[in-house]
Length: 96
Image (cartoon, rainbow, N blue to C red; front, side, top):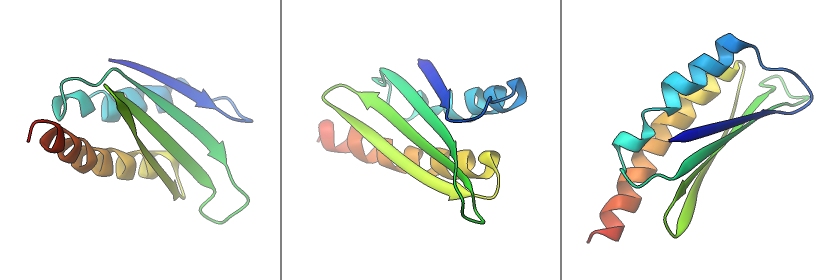
């Protein structure tokens, strides 16, 4: 599965990119037909100013999760947990 990362108005360091690959590289275990994944990282003026939006492409649709947190790592971890639940639901709905 290919993971594309776009950081808006800043440059993401390699450590963050590796963390994203580690956390989101596992989502295709929950739904084998995942085609790809796009991650948008941006900074907001809020106290929880790190925004992460993850789009996972599956045949016929896409699953989108967006979270804000004080660090990108926390937001990515939250997104990964929610994606797990959503992908299992999409898979069950499709094969029902």
